Length: 521
Ligand code: GLC
Ligand code: CA
Image (cartoon, rainbow, N blue to C red; front, side, top):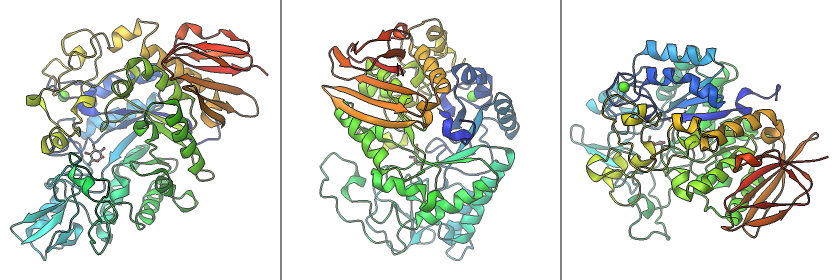
């Protein structure tokens, strides 16, 4: 592993800063809160933090509406707090990644205020202004075009009208945004997760999207059309390569792209000759039905499409999707964790996954997410997976001494860090063991993945290199299964005390049980 770039054998931990740790009792998590918890990451054994946006923002989309790419929002702290966090993280050997939001700014960004002030303002062309709207729809519902009275034109916003889209065809925009990247890279930030990378460039003729034949009533308004002209345009790849070039000015940094696309399109984001994103996020496990057949298919499909030399990555959850423990249930979430840690490449863990946190239902009057407010009831609400991290048994679970910005709810009664630490069977205990195992067994990170199969509800595959063979077995059948295996010893199982057990010819797995078996030579 010594000769691999750090990010290739890293486990990244996503912090949603509003919900991680509040340090000043205003009910909202902040940078000093994250800094106070740095030892938690060390104890857990992760390698890098990715912090969702912390820049000055009116918070129309909780920081994904940036008003200054080179500042810190006072809600989260000051630049001094950030510098201190970065420094103390680095001293512990932890890398820090920031979220970069290139597709759109806040409508309060000085660039947009200038752009909208007159048709001949020098920044007019920094955004996408048209006399007439086309049929493009916002990801948050309704037309993606907003009429601006003052200058009598429409501007494009792929998300909220408070999030106008930048014009990346304008070289000045590119230069200004790349300088923002350099600002953070110079400070020592280790890389970026790039927001909606596949949307950055749109059709230069603004052609209408074709209708979606699979559209049904009750779907989002965006689903009425196929995203042919406002997403995944061919020009995006040159742009991603340029962005990568900016990171390379600073040495070994990592560029991760948020991309929701079918696998063959996703893979294009590695770029020609792998000069694009280091890691186009792989959301296969986020979107796959949780059966052995579907999972085997998704893993096979991903691995088969991976370009030669490209580095794989895997994700179970993020701040936009229901939590894994809610999607598939708490028992199977343990098996999902073991599956994740048995797969090759870089892993990303969403805060709270290591506790087995579930979505918290949010009463109507407490809804915060703009996506839910704009299209209530169609399941776009993202508050449930963004609720505060429970640290202990105190009121508000040690997250804040004030009133938390989202409720901690009743669904995770005994799930908190303190209690999990003392429970040898907790999800936290499993995560710590998984992280140790991955560090101890380089074959899990970089070895070949072969013999992938699903049979009778059991998913299995082999990880091997010249030195070692590890078999991963996951029982998704809903009943006990006896599985033939080569002789070996259980390296780790979701049922933690089974580690060390010798297996001879076959092994019995309870429902939702999963294990990694070290095959004897
Ligand atoms: C990404 C973010 C999401 C945000 C959207 C608009 O999908 O993950 O939270 O709302 O982009 O910036
Ligand atoms: Ca705070």
